[in-house]
Each structure stands twice: as C-alpha cells, then as structure tokens.
Image: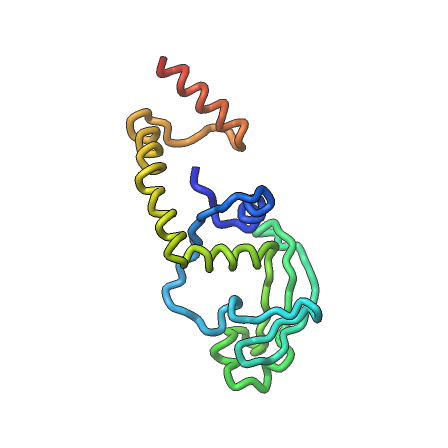
Length: 166
C-alpha cells in the first residue's frame, strides 16, 4: 500500500521516529513565486510575511467540510497597495488569504527532504523491492482491491484471498 502525502501520515512517522520517503502528489508544473510555501512564518507573532515582505495576519480558524480538517486562515494586511497584487491573488477584492492546514510544516520538510540526492536514491529502491510484489499480487493473484476499509478489513481480505488460493 502506497503511503499518501498527508500531514497526518507524515506526523505519525515522525512520532514513531521512522523515516518516511513519500513523494508529494501535487505536481505543479510551473514554480509560482507567490505560492504559500514562500510566505515566511513568525511563530512569536502568529503572522506570515509575503514574498513582498508585507504582513499576513491570523484571521481565524474554521472547519473545512470538504477536506474534513480544521484550517487556520490568514489575511494580507497591505494587499491593496502592493505592486504584485495581481500576481499574488486572483480574488476580485485583491486581498490574499492563506489557508494553513494541520501539519503544514511537516509536509514542507518532507518535500525538501525528497529533493535531496540521498532521498532520491532510497526512493528508487522501491522500484526494485516493493513494486514487483505489488505487481504480483495484482496481476498474478488477481487481488486488485480490498472490499473492506481500514487495516483490519485489509487483513481480513488478504487472509480470505490466500485461503481461496490454497
């Protein structure tokens, strides 16, 4: 099973002191200089600084129903007088908002780690070690999907599949 690039998964690995090598599944083709990863965070003031060095202040928290997570929202304070406003935001009101999801720092650290030569070499081993086993299970043994959800359900499905093969 491939680990997904979710903050909760990365946090879990960190808490267990495990080294996870997970690729970011967000493949943006062009580099945006106003992407939220370029906003610098000041923890003591709970504020960000945009690439134009303008403050982006904490506005509040709310539950995102679609993503099923609590998010923190930050609002640009000087967007109306900023010369890069049209490049930074597409909103009609011209103000930049940042939505920060839980474990954003852990995700950014993993992205940075995966760009290192060491991580690329380790991730390449997956091609030799993991993928052939997954290919065998899917193609030769016909197990393409689990019927039940969760780890316990996957265990039950795999045991059931092995017993049918015997």
